[in-house]
Image (cartoon, rainbow, N blue to C red; front, side):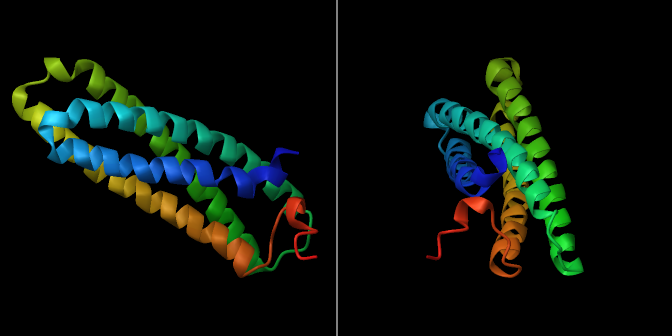
Length: 159
């Protein structure tokens, strides 16, 4: 049942996780406001990661509904790529969240050089995660716009 809401649910984590990148970047380049930017980023990345988990569950449910139809081999391949990337993206953001929490809790115990370099490392790692997020969305878009797949929520939307 949750699967019909996948297209609706997916947009919250996309917005939250994209905005988080801006906050992490600002935290890396503005040391005087670092704590405020990174604390805000942590809240958003946790909410976005929870949103990803809910969206992933909804996506798996949607895939079960869709896979009952006959799919072309290309559509099935894109569905599998979308699903695999979604799982890797979710795990990546969950791991990032744990690392981020650790950094913010223990930052004062790090040597000064690490306190200054770690935010830049977070930006680089986060940029990589955004590549996974973008590719996941790309394959989701292909499923809808190239292969015409959609959830039952939109069956009457064209009328």
